[in-house]
Length: 279
Length: 307
Image (cartoon, rainbow over all chains, first blue to last red):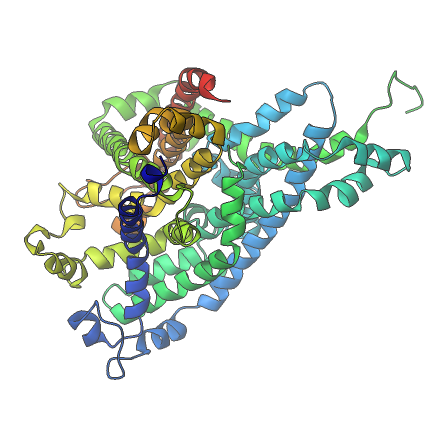
């Protein structure tokens, strides 16, 4: 019996397939980053070779940093993502607490109403969202993006967080009530610290789509001063179609921050998924 | 409030709920309803006039619109079918390999295979556009290494293969999601079930097909509906790789890019919010139908497999 589960041939085959797929997953990223450090001729002559002393060239990065206003785009993306994330976590946790802690008329109906947004994408409402933003003068402001992303992130955040809050011990909360703590203090002082791991999971799930979104920046905030890094990269890449050094450098600059963040948070993210947070 | 009701009004419930409900309702639900409503109106001399289902009649009947719409719907369906046939089986296979108990480096594999999923469409679209480009020798060189250079052609530039190539790029990007969810489902199978199977001599492949697969069907159901919603709402990858015109000759046009052109306008085409709303309504109905099929047909039947 143990032979069947642990035979070396099977394990070699398993590693073989996994290594093959890992190469497929990482190869495009690697080839872009590696070639961004090479001179133009080397990019075309030997695309599969790493840069050597003679082919090493940073001309692409120089072009990007001179031409594009990437630092500014980066700042916009950061503001939009961080503020939306904060609002999603705060408002989402508050609503989740209210739904999981108190029994009131319409509780489950409210839960269902808020869960609608998990399945129905907010993108379908774009036509009316644009009209709303035009009417309220919010077009081409970061505020419009923050509002949209907050609304987009709330349903899943509320759903995941209320599952977790149901697991917080009632005794603890009741002890707090006997000690005369207000409901607000119980929420902020007792419950929030206990669901911190769930908050981290929700944060990662909320952050990735916001940072990577192209649709809403394109429609709601395409002006120069409000461009996000994703939209900026898209337009920049479109302009420099023939300058391969610049394109590869811009792509690498766009990949690196995400990759570093991902490696820093990957354990959190993977634990979040595998602990059944999204089931 | 001096008149005391039976129970004091618990204001804190409202305070906790209000911010989320207000933002969600104002920015998501009302605009969604507003969009559905706009689909029933038309600008006549710059005044919004109620025209009933006229916009939908135009969308399905007027060749200026219907050709594009059916083309986008057909392409979108293909896009979804390719995801279901390629992404999910690969995801299940990778998860099954990763979940074998004695596997070394499994954390490394998991992290590496998930990398493309966290990258933005802009990066993915452009990186693949460069790799598949005949100008840059990467794809032909690689095929040459395994002696298959004759297979190479500019896939993204040909009408017959562009959609398939882009679907596969999207599969490459998102295969991490089914892998992770199935992996989680496989880990949650109780050890007793596996041990019982091994005592009965069911091991290896047979164990996977007969014991594990039926037990992870609910997770496969969830992945299918997530894929469905994601695919019928997709836009970014096509827009990045092929532009708003979804070339060559609209062969990669899907509902998202069709909606973008109709509602926002592109080049010679003038944006029409009402037609855009009509297309968004169709996408809403398609996604709603998919979700309903999942909730009422798939999920209720799969429940009985759960522990």
